[in-house]
Image 1: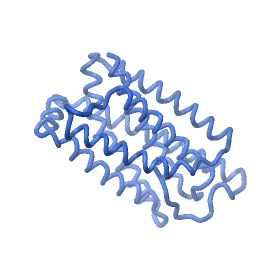
Image 2: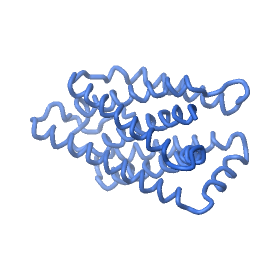
Image 3: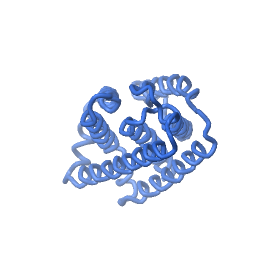
Image 4: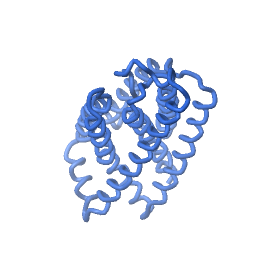
Length: 237
């Protein structure tokens, strides 16, 4: 979720052709990020014995997943900071690339479990299709209404902290707190709000040269949506 913008000259204040070019660049980079994520994930999943290695590493301690989550959050912060760079396009691309790799790595255990449950990629493909449809619908809402959803920023910050707290408690006390179907449903709604927020920022608040950062924000929201849509599909198996 993006909250700061280095360029004071926002897209909303520019002529139609400049706004259109910015939007094309943003969604082109988003498509590239999704493709890169899929390619990296495919390469990781094709490594012989990758499942045993991953689950053995995560099984060494009940806090292993918390460590992974903490590293992911730190790397995400660095990637976001680089993507928002106002001085170097190369640094922006480094931030986007770093975030794609981080997402691919943290998704790996979940995708492995989805594969093991069905012995194929059917759950992953179904979840990906639903995620794409939801994203398309939310994008249509944001662009057709042209409403500024920046008011969601504070709500999403608080909601994100609460969700993180629930996840930590569930990992530390798995017998007392379980992250079941309803948590996944709530997080799908949260991710949908993130997509509306980030899409609104593309329309109203980003600077004209911040299409890399804009695509990273959208990619992060889409990845979050995909994570919990897949969790819902897995819970029904």
